[in-house]
Length: 220
Image (tube, rainbow, N blue to C red; front, side, top):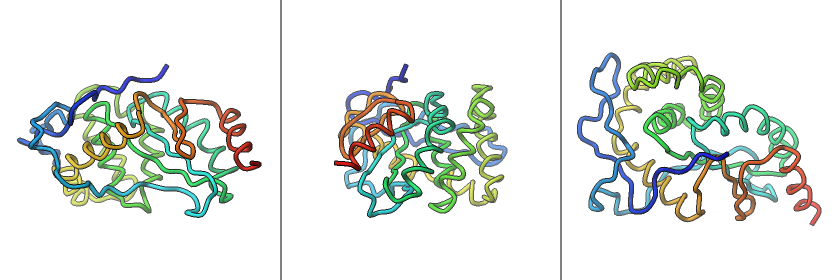
């Protein structure tokens, strides 16, 4: 069963007052997914880079829409993506694009940690976030969750100073939510994980189901 997208209709942007996720801070972040007045939304196209694995010249493109707090997404990354990577992405057959979905502020914070490492560290941090999903989400306490995510970032080589900068970048947080909403509205994303394969939408599936679709396309 797919998790429903809780941002429905209108422009969902961030209420930016009192944004702080620095070390030892008792000031917790705003709820990043609360509705705000339309005038608070960015008026220009948001330039958020896609995170990509595989060759730019691959004949097939897969776009995954996923939430870092979604158990079904964690399962996909643990059981399906490794086979997709070995058989199709690393062999130049598939260009794989990962796009974050924000059901909640915890998923947004995880995204900001993953992107803090830049493109070179992104997928390594993503793997850790999914691998440890049950641990860092377990408490439900925002203070604990922030600290657990920071620990993952530091394990990946990020410094406290880097994490402070990334996690207190309110403009980046706001732009990420606007970028997500634009993508989700355009592609009709209502649950995770969802996949766009050469522009056609698919729901979660097994590796064998992916293989059937991809092999048919490659043979066509």
